[in-house]
Length: 339
Figure 1 (tube, rainbow, N blue to C red):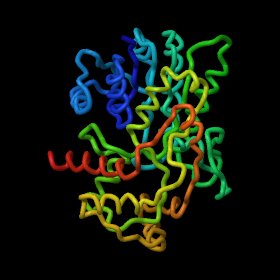
Figure 2: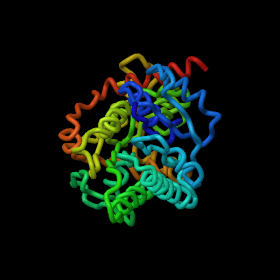
Figure 3: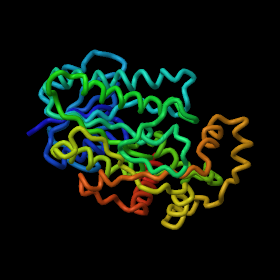
Figure 4: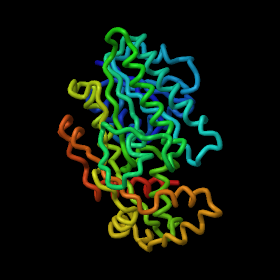
């Protein structure tokens, strides 16, 4: 049985990756920053699959060298999912950029030393679609974010810099090492396996369900189901056509946040508002609120993506939008009901 190291095992995406790997017959070693979260992760994975004796844990930190070489021992593949995701914009952008970049390089160096066969890196469309002035541009896997452009946040910079560092590392090798595939998700939606629903995606839905969002701003997003991301990551392990490529894993068209609200409201979540928040209110509140200031940046921005390479290489049929939203709503409601 081949073993896969999954970094960031307490995370929303990583837990779905772990479950998918176990279903496909792999054994998994996953990393945590604090080993006291092991029981929590095991409980989350058990909602999807019986791990039996095929799930083990180790402790790693993106900012520290310790443990990375040992974590790779006995593994054939790596899914490097861990990356800092700030809930608020940091005062110092390097607080996000440095861990993302250096953590990625630590993973690559350790993978090389351990003779790993292939590494799948979770990046983001944040490394593709920001900092450009052309509103009609269609973005694809060939595009890169301009980190010197307007409204490029520290998080967006961190994903771009970290992914570029990974490709630079691969190109700098004088002889063949492991293969690498990069997965670039957009806004990730879908059910949570964990009771920890404090992440950006899950918290947004929770705030809809509890009516903490009293009106919906005119914000649009490209999205992808977390279960699709997990399946694509696992399929990439054996799919040689994905070697040396990056994949925009996203809806082609931007979806209004209001569509999420309407889908929840008409499918068993009557507390969810479908009132819209006028742009002028967002702009006024942005004078006083950091959250609204960020929101103002994204008002009425629609981005078109081209996911054709992902569809072609993986024969990918995305999970329908309505199923994604309903399943996510149910999973978050269940967590809130059990508290």
